[in-house]
Length: 305
Ligand code: ZN
Image 1: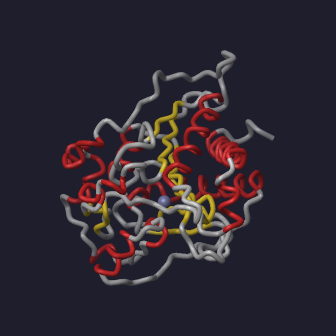
Image 2: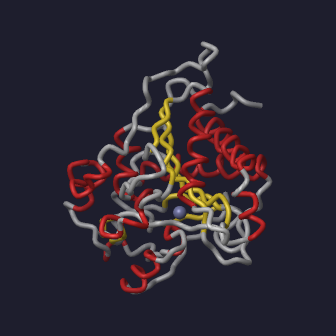
């Protein structure tokens, strides 16, 4: 078994909020307090947020941001059933293009079981100004095309890169409602400039909440990690995680998921070497190919040599 490292960083609520609102990818920088679920904001009512869309009523501008596949296409364009026929996959491109101009919406705190976090964040960017939200959406779009070509039904959590949100709670709920066979949140990090590499983040156990998805999410994470390393050539992160893997309990998109799900930080936008790759459309296509291979390995093992 691989080593799973749970970060044990304890911060005050004020520091947490400040970190979460910082310009960098808050999903990485906004460290929480793993293992403190019992002392967190969990409550009998609050924990049902993910399963009840009505609980997201304050999220009106985002209510339409859950495009469904135009049809349940379960065959490849050639007419032959693909290896992913019948599989629903939810792709969640992190952040959104207009988040920065709607702070009142995205800074609203939402319950992610282990803590309260902003509805959404603005994300990272390269030193040259290529924004993470655009990277995430471009990769998700490329990946959706590849997965559909394998027969999958793909649902994105937002239809374009010009909107606001949706909240992290809603991003999880979209996967849950779709009864996804697998889901991924796509990100790129705003880490230390000296740090390179990618990491896949798996959900940590929150007793009473997500026990059913821990095992399959771990298998999904390993499949994604292995395919990404092999096909993109990107190294494992040298500043976070262990061998390209991490386990966290502070991410709403994972905590609230009832379907197998992982996050990926595809690289470090603040590192010159990584930024050059992430800015390159050909490399983003390679990333999409890698992620598609990971999903296929998880959902249809044996279909690819
Ligand atoms: Zn991010």
